[in-house]
Image (cartoon, rainbow, N blue to C red; front, side, top):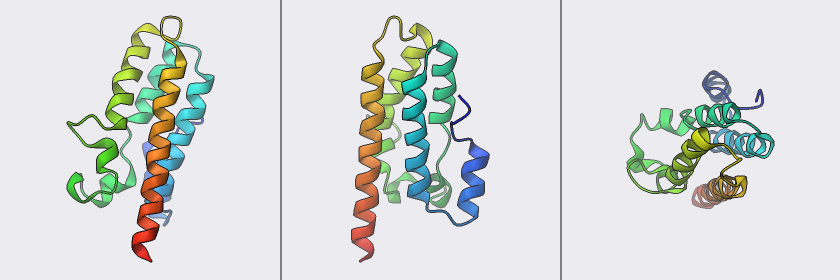
Length: 128
């Protein structure tokens, strides 16, 4: 699954001036694309590894979630859409898509992407 974002790619592109929300959105678009093509437990494990990569907003906020626009999505210790995705992807890492329909996991990834797009829209509105 070579298309998944790496931590080094995320940091390098952020340091070059790319928008933190755009990079986060791209990370999840690539995860969703990889999910569509996943066909083995090892693929789900690679997706899990990509899902836990910190995004630039974690770096900007120094892991202080209180001021982060993504707080309601990831919300450590809460059941945001990221938390639900993480529980589900771990189940796929054990069971694989033979036992679990991939549609549920794709739905959760789609929800994260929708939430990220809403965050980006909100941040643009606040700037104006």
